[in-house]
Length: 303
Image (cartoon, rainbow, N blue to C red; front, side, top):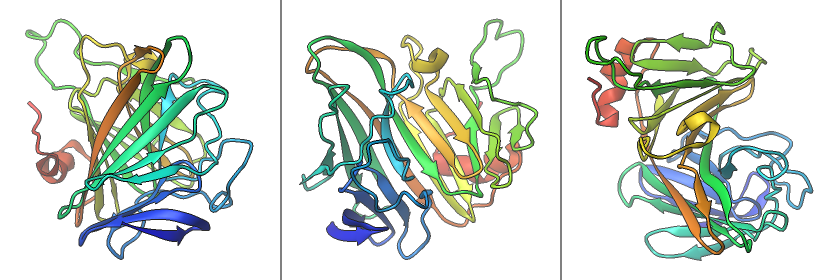
């Protein structure tokens, strides 16, 4: 762990081992603005024109990985997290504490734990309600991926008609979702979404992630994002979506969501993701590619 200047911000925290390194902003956010193998390229997108800025009155994307609260609404979700954060070294992890949000009375904390030896990071997102009343919300973790890659999302387990008379999964669409868009590949076991800088129309999809993972492959590098599988008895935002995916001409976002909760005054809610990086992974274009090259890395095989 060391403090470094990065992309125009004077105060950032770099965490590294022999395999992977990441950088978290302390002047704003926090945002995990860089993630990659040591001496390699950034797997996260960054937004030109916004880097190094502080103190803006309006919310800035910046790129990287961020912590939001669902359901998405204006202006509460887009609180301008453009001020310095408190950094605490807890030995096994580093804690980044954002200032209390003036308008929402929420306070967000992000704990980042880099495995000592492996290309593995655990990120815990915690929100505390400092209002004198309960608020319904869900922690929401969004990773903004660099352009030009392919996202992988697993569908719920497949089965025959005889033994599956009731539905096992659902897909949630937005008004701008276009299933005929050529960036989508609809398989039996998986859905693929290609990020294409030449396609300007946004696309988004939500679903019940019973396997609890999402992936992104770009130039041989595979980013695996794992989180708690969809809880059948819980209610999630966005018509019961525990995972979402979004793309436009500049980025692709891998998003996981915790269940909705009535967060009492002074109570907290947390949501944890585990990230892993793998090298020399072929970009999938079909279910067969995912089964052969991705699933062994995830550690799960679909029925």
